Length: 205
Image 1: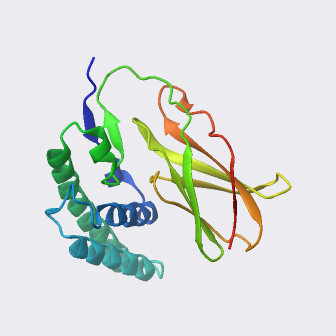
Image 2: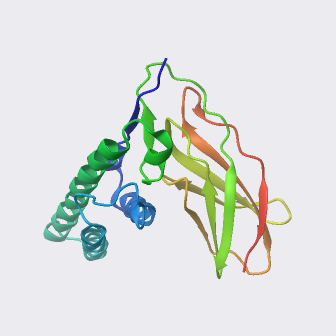
Image 3: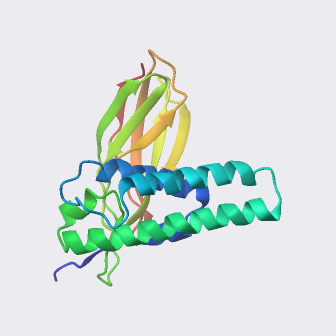
């Protein structure tokens, strides 16, 4: 049976904070992406909507219905823009799974049968920013999100992160010179979670 791949529109239900992270990933993935040269919302316009939401979130933290309403309006405007870009990505890529993944959007298969997810792989860990690591994980069909565990050299858990992006999971607050070990798993499928990936070490800078 041929699989039918569709762009996941679940970002419309994300919290404002998660939507900010997701949109940053979309901008990163589409910048210079020759498969999607003319999105219906330019990346500059998308970045402006993102900034408006971040500013509205900061203002809404002070409380008050007008500020909260303004934050909600900014979030809805960003979601609307992302929906337009998602439709464009689907139209441009069709059923080319590899091309769809380069957009930064999560991809679903519309096959009815749900199956367990395989373990993803950590393909790269970047340490080019001080006190920060960035992990890249293989995207999986029907994965809703990804989890990353970060361990200290003595094996104790340092941090657990949840991310909607497989290609860019940022680990903040690491200590330069310390070797951390990372493992990732996908969320979704018939069992809820995939197995954990093989551990991969990286020294922080």
